[in-house]
Image 1 (spheres, rainbow, N blue to C red):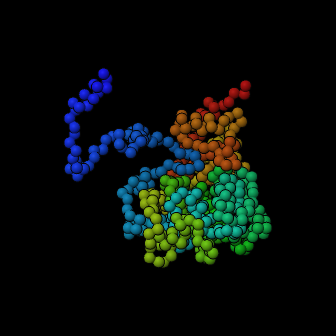
Image 2: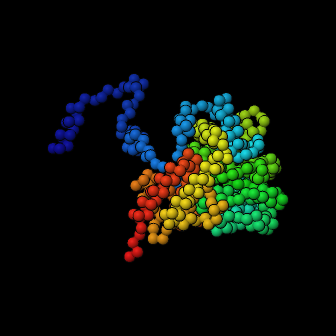
Image 3: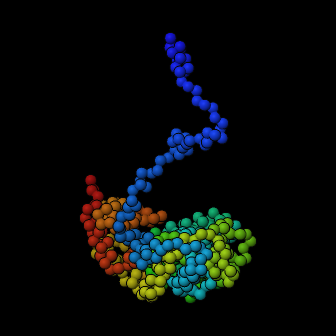
Length: 422
């Protein structure tokens, strides 16, 4: 009975006319036939929400309105003459900040860490001896990078919180006869300022190039590339220059440039090949050629950060950072906190480290300061992890008022975050 009913119903439905495909037109796409399997994220349907915080950690620092406005300008093309002019102005600003006449001076399209990789991979080849001074995380990172390049990596070591003497370095130079020495001027993980006097002369006497990381110190402590005979110097944009991270100043001496020209192999990265970058930045005297689409708006911001440093003056910037660092150190000691770096002359003026006080959890302190006072300070990094708090007073944020604000927040945290001894 059921089968008969179904057959009868089928006979009752009129047959659809069979038209040629060319007359029926394209098939109608339905939702069921869509290739999409992931819906638009609900969070992206909401307005962008960025909290307002005072960034007093090891970087980045807050960006001044003038630099923010520069970064918000409409884009230009990477080869527009106006872009190239701005790049020339950045070059001049870096030469001022580094105190160098080196023609091979430019900004890497990347952070300071990218500049570290660019410096090492353009210098070191398979089998080259590289000596790394390690007293914090940045020496450890440099050794890792050099090892990945196939270099023979040797280390000279100091405990976190200490700096290297010329004797420490010379022992390593005599023993390992390296192509290049890597050393960090401002070790942001430990708060140590490395003296540079006599280091370049010492390296050259032993046939070695001097590579200096100044990401945490540029503009906050004296650094004179030509006078101190530094061969390769790089920095970042996000600390004293108070620009967003993403464009990193770097400069090579003539001695370093000649070494790169004598390479047996091409640098392992096309993107960071200094030959191409030198041409794009107008450092080789040849017509500029496209290499990569640069972060144009980051260049705008970097240009303004360098302009503000030039207007203030390097010596005034050094003095400002030293004065505010000393004021912070006294305030921290008045709170009963112990400074991590013992010698005053070895303290990095931009980033101060204090020991985590007994009976406290550093995570609770940093979380309290963030949640209650909207201020960022940080714990340690690498060898200083769990041991210190790091407070950055640099660039746009290097003011006495900001020091007072973070000291009030820390006083509040010390009253509320003490751990029970039970």
